[in-house]
Length: 105
Length: 144
Ligand SMILES: Nc1ncnc2c1ncn2[C@@H]1O[C@H](COP(=O)(O)OP(=O)(O)O)[C@@H](O)[C@H]1O
Ligand SMILES: [Mg+2]
Image (cartoon, rainbow over all chains, first blue to last red):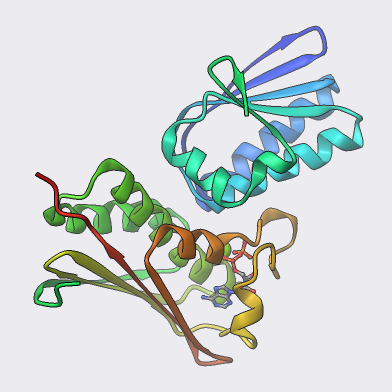
């Protein structure tokens, strides 16, 4: 997992298979980055996610909850079709911004 | 649906999270004979992942138990049955509601909702202290 800090934005690139097995490590890392840099905007770049199930939803929802406690926001971007379908099934776009190449959904 | 049965596959695993990815891949490989689209295959893998993860997380919260995955392929659909001998579900209708979870902040409560929307049919049979069986079917459209 790679990340980049630009002023008040933390961009985290998530890759691989996002399931219950991999979630613990990934969410610890995401939380650590938020706590260390206290960003205003957290960008989750999902381009490298080959598979995601509802465990990944808990990561996105948990991240957005944590960011709103800091008066910040979450943007999810570059979501491949399979993870996108899972985000849509859960109606996640109601509480996080999902960006598809330039467009905001 | 054409109900002529073609083949069957049965897999038994222990409730260890490392087996989530393995089971998804195994079921996907078995389903390949129906020539599913990438989207259909993704739907099947996602639903299997949800059902198996539920056994690992909820059926056997602090023990390692057995999980059986049985797949049957018919002319144009697949049936996947995931069975555990764990804790069971007291109120299945409630468990199937979106956002309902007994798993705390780590879980989204959207597993059954995802299974329902990605598959054509979802049946859940459960008895407290005995176990749970989740049966899902999905039609795979024939392609030219
Ligand atoms: N195999 C199972 N054994 C026992 N309880 C289960 C099982 N599957 C699901 N449940 C119960 O149903 C609830 C909802 O499941 P689900 O929709 O997958 O959400 P989540 O896994 O995020 O909690 C679980 O929190 C749990 O209480
Ligand atoms: Mg679940």
